[in-house]
Length: 272
Image (cartoon, rainbow, N blue to C red):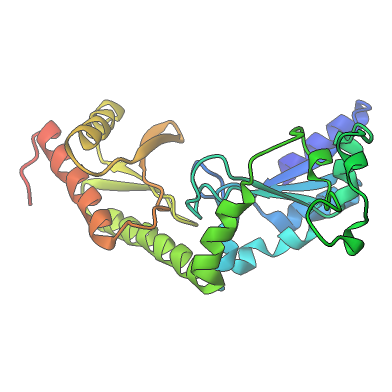
């Protein structure tokens, strides 16, 4: 927060208008949640737009236990979330929320077209069929004039799971991350690089980066465990992200066991 305030102060001195403050509600890399309420306060102080990137993490707000961390979403001017991540709709389904829909119209609308607006004969409240009214003018609210019906994918998942089902999925996956973190803390040859806030865990075998890179390679080639990687404070991390509806606790334990086994083989350590 101090760095943000300093950057805005420097920009203001230089005549640069602080247009927007962006916070992340669960980073895709590590699952970290920014201090959203503090960011909202700074944005209000400077009359700046407050945007929240919840692409990966915002679905976690469905969990009663995690919801307090996302309370400041209510103060945002715009928010995004990707159902294709934690809701598993398939790639290409994303959602944008804005406090004032007129802002989108002002940014993207190009004026009426006879073949679009002129083809409809009634206002939405008078419509009898889908051919009477154009409804909400989504084609004037984004860069896409036309688009596939992506919302059906999110609707289908939510229709099947309901709020309680989404919350249960989130809590189960976050529980997997915490379980892995606990095992990494307790094992003498594993290192936990970050405490998980959501369902991402950053850990590694207690050895060099090349050893961990080779562990990742062998995991993907010889086991059913396929984590990605990232870098935490200059160290290569093994980075599982639990969002797959089919993942079970046994899969989590198998990943940990594979990392230990492969790491022991590479370093010549005798198994416990």
